[in-house]
Image 1: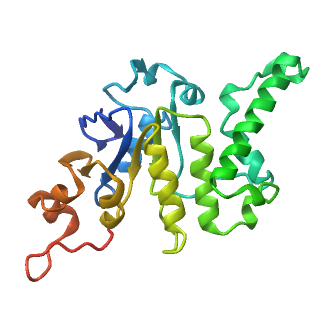
Image 2 (image 1 turned 180 degrees about the vertical axis):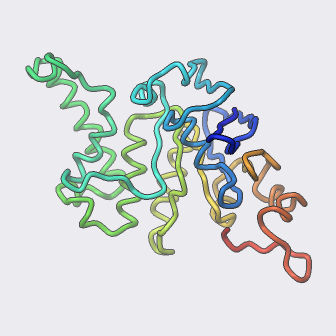
Length: 252
């Protein structure tokens, strides 16, 4: 895949293959092209050349709103929630692609009512699994930020995607808030492929099966978290090298 913005090449002929399940991470310095890649995979931005296939479906032939139906869902770097809707209603938004629209939906036919009941059952089950059930009638704006990030990921998960894209899901979370979201993502990785942008290697070493490192839009390394951490090019471009030749692990 190649993505250009005018004369700027944001993603430069990058190849990526993700198995059916597991957690796979994208890391790299700010401006490396990580979020642009996620945006291209979810059809938020256009690509200059290349292809994106999910279980044989060419995602680039779909309109942006059809991507969820093809099995691709995402969260955002900042929790993008609807403050005028409840927690439960925000979760139901994640099932919009499965709901009947148009005249049939407006008339509330028996089929439409069955869809809405099934959607509510799925949403309620997920809220209970994530220990958010007691907050179902709250506005997301009234929740702690950690709960907002958890809800944002849950809204992507409820569509039961084949590929879940997460853009820095742990950004802004406190140490106390991290384990809950970490457990949610680890569970998702057992059911689908999770491609996650993350800066902190200490989080990745516990859950990521593979790490892809980007710099200036290109892949410069790929492998296990521990292997990538020792890669000379990664040390030079991303992690940095301390006075004694040891990799510095501060977030970029």
